[in-house]
Image 1: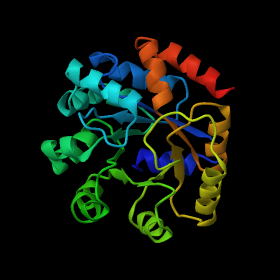
Image 2: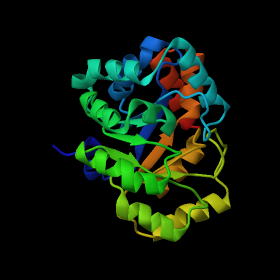
Image 3: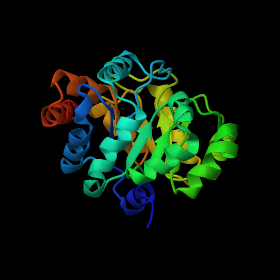
Length: 260
């Protein structure tokens, strides 16, 4: 069976995919399954499930605060995998775990990849995983379990590095809209638009998803015009928190914000 991430992009011709991020265990410990199933029912193409960590370097205050809440609630990898396994048969869209290297190393690389497969997870994003370690240590194990390790590129990533990532990964490339931490932005300036065009012109093998800073119609359109789709994190996490975990309410508000 084809990996769900590859399947999604193989079947998607409209280049308007929307992927949402939320932090597992926030606002409530038991809410993970409900968030995933509701997002799937409402037409979200792919879901990034955040693994809470005490020192999330790439994340802004919104996601840091959600991670702190999740850890207080008692969320950890073991709990997350058992929650995901319980809904595995109902989930048809790709799930991608996003987390830092430290908790994954503690869990064990092989155990992590095996648990991902058992829980119906198709890929992982590990922002602080050095590329050499990915190639030599993580990739061989992930390949064995048909798990996609997704790499990030930023406006600062060299063309040579981008080509290297494109040649040695599969699934999609996470294109960070700016070198800053996660958070919302009103619009993408000329420099970001030029970056999008520059990457477009490289004709990469892998599809790309643009994330960081997408929160309204303007940023969403820019992302969807320049890649296979957009990833929204901070905005959805904020709305989910404000809605006290009511996913439908949070989504209604998100779609409203994205139409303006």
